[in-house]
Length: 168
Image (cartoon, one colour):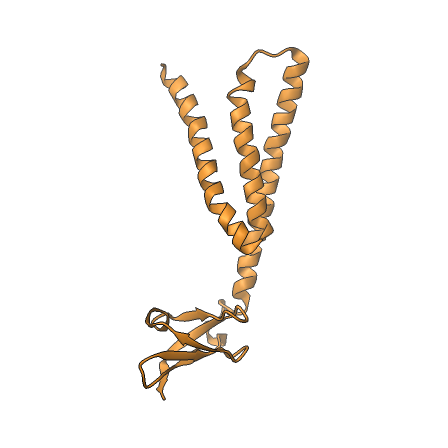
């Protein structure tokens, strides 16, 4: 096997492996969040995988002029669609990430809201009250060591102020 044939085979096998691995991680993310960006990424990866497989199977066969023209037109249109759908998915995911952190105002730390104190109970457990919805949460020891906690009721990120921990 020549060096170029090896690189040719390694390239498309690697591409399929990378696409399948990415799909393995994207599917649970979409299932959990129902975010359209992950759906678009998954669709783009499926089309790209199909495109690579076709290039190395159908694309290597001898075709007549009309068949060759139709095949490569479809292939290039699929390639363009993959790029467009991938960019749209990426933009949607980045915008949702920025919207999620907009409430924290990360640009100016002085404007950031003060942290919420943890109340340490007599039995040694810790509780936290969400300032948005007023829900009391009993924290595990691992959660009480974190600097932030996500309220399960209102999905707001609550910053924990360790300096304001009080005893009951």
